[in-house]
Length: 241
Image 1 (tube, rainbow, N blue to C red):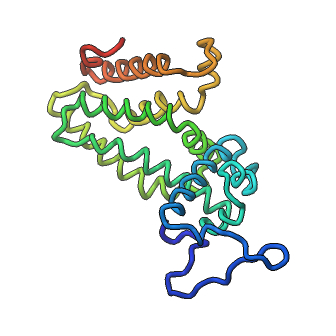
Image 2 (cartoon, rainbow, N blue to C red):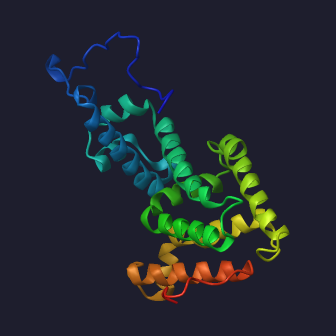
């Protein structure tokens, strides 16, 4: 990621090789082929998601993250520079993944198909990336110290653009009148609860975890409920109710 602390300068000057005990050169990620470096960076971010989700920013340590990622602790500092920079990388990756599904909400799209696709993808992300959602929720609950500027600079204009599309559909009589911005809040709350409060949901349902059947049932419920509230047809024929 551009501008991330700890990157090797591009000016051509090589850093002195780190040495361990007895002056023996220590293996670092700088010696790995590019493909391995990228895979290792991905592994670090995914491990950081799990640790930050469980311990929060304050309780997480770089040592725990390194252990979870299966890499030496110096590699974390090499790639990200600091715990705060790694935390920021986790949040930024989550935002990128959450913004992408909204690409289907465009004026030329069919409202039901676009909103259904968006909701289904948000549900999928809640089931497949629960740790990212929990890190995000914890950040917001603490006043968004790292995210506040990003929310204003990135999320606000995106929601404004997508809400304008929904308002256009409403004006054209293609869906029921709803508050377009609050519709997004409703979708986020309905989908992300399956990541953030999975323990509560499983306790009520008497499940050890949300398996594929439970996930499908939850997805059909959320899709149908929101689409009906928008005055659109429910799930497409043939889908499990």
